[in-house]
Image 1 (cartoon, one colour):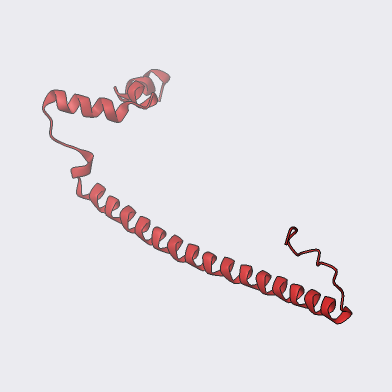
Image 2 (cartoon, rainbow, N blue to C red):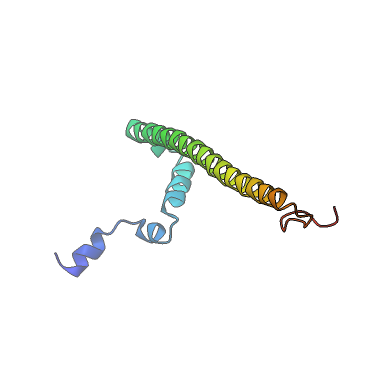
Length: 112
């Protein structure tokens, strides 16, 4: 196919499509012509829209489950760290009591 034939085979709305206004231009042309056809009215488009909506619902549900799982894990990890800190403080307290020291713990708040 020659270059001239290729150029003539390019759709009329190629410029509008290239600049991102192809759909808007086509809709405006349809509206101006009184045409009532819309892509959303095509059953194939509607079927794909339904599939997309289902995938989005499933994705949101999966994300919700994963976020709940993550939140539970964060709480568990924080709980483990809090228990470890509590045990450390208890051991420090027991050590201070065993020595009979009146010295304040480094972790005790000042001004108490």
